[in-house]
Image 1 (spheres, rainbow, N blue to C red):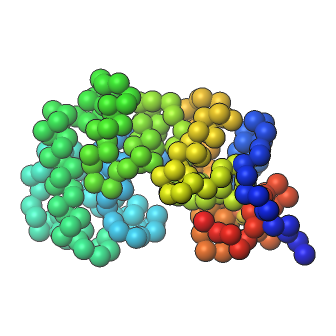
Image 2: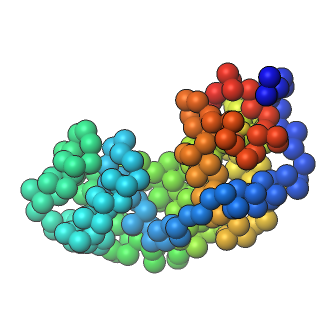
Length: 238
Ligand code: SF4
């Protein structure tokens, strides 16, 4: 039998393990520099529903070309034009159009039309609260925007990265997704350097690993370069 079960699920890793894990992943994956403008990242999240990255990118590019990544242009865009794009982004296109309008409204009403400048002018905790007013942006999304846009140096993970860290034994799952996310962020904070480049790499590489091998339904452990260090019991899942 190739794998021993993770009997305890306890996060008993040493502080050196996480930087070496991320360094190891960097030898297996590469990634494109993520978007670094807050409004772009918010629109990226809201551009479609349950669509893969390739389709999301195509729709985002179309939105940028036909509408523009500017609150005023979104607010002024004809409904039919927005709906035409939204229809290719999955279910409930009308709701998506409403969300794009809402995003523009918040930027115009609260930030004088310039979200990036407004976020940079306020303390990080207030910037995080403001970001969470936007559709589809919760704690993970707000942390990601603050980090990727260079507004605050803080850990951030998406669901793929979170799942990977749990399976590897760095994080004990909490009673809810939010509790597990907080534990994982604390782990990154404690075990990794507080440097934006490293935190962005950790986010992107753990995401890549979760999408490619440490898949949600069935992790591909036999192909995984981390298998010797992994605490995961395949039946446990997340
Ligand atoms: S793919 Fe398997 S071995 Fe690799 S990190 Fe995920 S659970 Fe562990």
